[in-house]
Image (tube, rainbow over all chains, first blue to last red; front, side):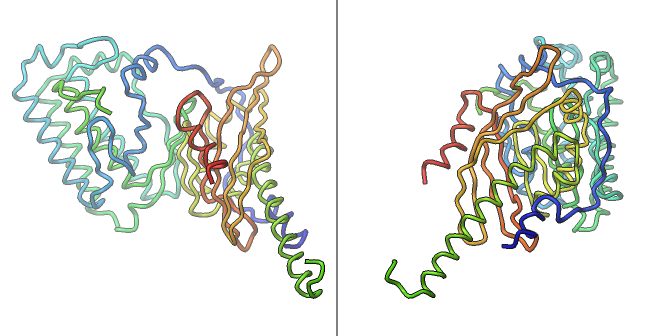
Length: 223
Length: 162
């Protein structure tokens, strides 16, 4: 190896990646808040982005083992399971918050609806743009409280509509597009890469995992 | 060895020099991460990796150099370097096998604060590296914060359990 070749380790190849100066207005890294500590103590500290390549250690769901094109229909199937649950469950049970840090079934349902919507948006974005960066999806506490005031029928219908949209978007993707990349910048929580298939994996896993949460049939200690 | 023909001795010497060059180049590659990310130079950080790279830690999962660049430009990293940071690797244990190599070692990140400096993170690291036409590049880096858990122990064990 020549001296020039060694120098090129740092200076040789310069892809045209974006560069920008530091932003003095952002917050500094911090320690986990009380809610994060609560979730960690319940055994919920798994890095959920891993669902795009591994089974969930809590619920066993493994959407990454499925063909990407099947994930949209799976979302519709899981939305139908939510509809059946929401139709049958008692209204008081649906709105009951079991303990701090655990959501009511209706809050879980609204969260799944929003995940289906947001992640489908991100699949569309990733198909249209090269390596886009998207922010953390973290509704504030007041939104979670509003979730619990939702109408059950309306929420079930919306959840089903968002699943059908994911199915439609997936059906129209070129096969090669499923491996395109979206970067999820979660600020102080870290930075994670998703393929478009990985985004769909996360959406369908959330629909399954949180239905078990809502039914009270997920054993968080089974991992 | 001293009695061997000159051409054999030269060949053996070339092989040893090549190994030393490879190990030095890999050390430089690993060390270059710090100045790149501490100055927010996303291009330089991304250029250390292959196109099929993965950078995985308890704070990130990044696939492709473009994702590495996006991380450097992201809110969390920008917050870290705003007040001054220093990503400093210890000398890694490097094993070269032809055009592939591995390295294992510690890294620590210092932050400048109002009271001076603090060690923000100390991590165990394992790098998979590949010789490319542009020199050595990182194919996969796994960094795990050292917190008493098994993940960091497993990474460090790779250096001594060979």
